[in-house]
Amino acid sequence: MATAAQIDRRFGLDRRVVLPGLFALASGQSLAALEIGYETYGELAPDGGNAILVCHALTGDQHVASDHPVTGKPGWWRRLVGAGKPIDPARHFIICSNVLGGCMGTTGPSSLDPLTGERYAMRFPVITIRDMVNVQAELLNHLGVGRLRAVVGGSMGGMQALDWAVAHPHRVQSVIGIATAARHSAQNIAFHEVGRQAIMADPNWRGGDYPSDAPPAAGLAVARMAAHITYLSEVGLTEKFGRRLQDRSGLGFSFDAEFQVESYLRHQGLSFTQRFDANSYLYITRALDYFDLAAPHDGQLARAFAGSRARFALISFTSDWLYPTAEARRLVRALNAAGAAVSFCELDSPYGHDAFLLDAPEMNRIVDGFLRAEP
Amino acid sequence: MTALRPDLAAIAAAVPAGARVLDIGCGDGALLAHLRETKGVEGRGIDVASANVAACVARGLSVVQGDADTDLGDYPDDAFDMAILSDTLQAMRAPAMVLGQLLRIGRRGVVSFPNFGHWRVRRALLLGGRMPVTPSLPVSWHETANIHLCTIDDFRALAADLGFAIESATFLSDGAGRGAAFANLLADQAVFVLRRR
Image 1 (cartoon, each protein chain N blue to C red):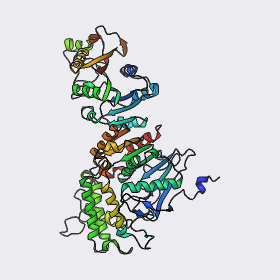
Image 2 (image 1 turned 45 degrees about the vertical axis):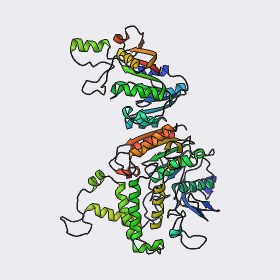
Image 3 (image 1 turned 90 degrees about the vertical axis):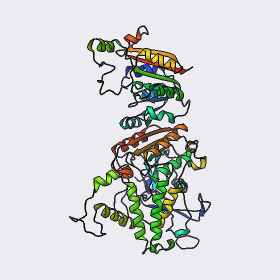
Image 4 (image 1 turned 120 degrees about the horizontal axis):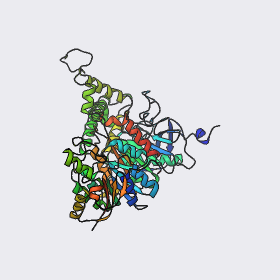
């Protein structure tokens, strides 16, 4: 027998919704139309108490546990989300949406501006993490989800999860933030600026008004290569590539990708351009750089969480130098000072920031235990 | 529920129902879970080992990975009704500083430790001429985490020096409670409840 959820077209994989009305942004500007690409897994419990929002990272998307439509690769967090996993459609109603500014179905710079009928490109307003969170809140309203048993995310997804507790404290029972921070550091901003400048220096960028069949792929690939280094660790790179050469026995005295690490980065850069929009990359990195939860509170992070009653679980990884343990500890201090129930664990991993996307049994154990605990 | 370690049971007896408690060096969370289930205590924990933190979170406790020697400064004054330091003081680099933090964060502090004045310890040194290995100090000197061992009388003296009043004291011998008479010689573990003067 089909249940209401199964025949309700709001629920399921690869959904789209256009929400009416002006959507106000942190910048003071607004969007005339808002489309959201999202997926849901499992069924919302009658009391609405099993909803979990999963937030994706900079270059992630709503395909958290389903195959990617472009690359065909399995969902980006299949290790944590799926049957028998800590976040399980058999027990949870799971929502994951493409962020505002993205290029996988949610309104972003590659969308058509309804007022002009043309792509927004660089006429898209600058957005923030808070704007992304508010779009997710609109989606939850559309889905009939009042409160969230948990908001879960890694990296930029973790920032959204934290901001949920700040922006919508009454809707959030618990927050899981993995490999994340309450602000972007000077070094974080610096690496992003390298990426943005690489895109803008590509002649194909054309001030953002590139045709879809001639994007600034070279610039976007360089941006991805620079960023990808920050997702790994020196130990990880040495272990994986060392100084080994790619398909050759000796130095070629050329500028080909002679080293394996060069070949790997070029591949990462190139494959990224096939699934990601350059302008989206500009806007989302900007939103990350603007992120600082303490900024509205004279730098006092604890005050940001004053209204929250959520439980928090934070996880960092030893070799993550993008969002290092020190940033997680700063959050722990602030949450303790705010009287929040917070758990924190630094896990051993040689894989750098990317560790949160890889096999991490301790991470799964903590997430599972935290989610199973009575709120 | 499995039985609590005897010193933990003595600590639990000192915690009033519904108290806000911080357990420093909470291990796998046995005490916090016991306090939650039997006394409705709202507990938090700190432990240095990630495996212990994972075990605590898995039983629904709020526990932070951290080092009592360095991380207690992160907690505000009077954040808890009781701060507990069970079988941990002797492993601290700076026990006096940690005790000071304990009574800053908590309105009251509970401390349990192995008594280095126990007769088995004295006998091992006096007759054997060797560092003692006893039921309450089971690890040999070069492997033990215990770097600042003290006797019950030492602890009383330190508490007085730091300006703390001893509200109550419980003494254990081979896991069973015993009286205060000759405790410095006959008790192998002690549990003190301290408050600020």
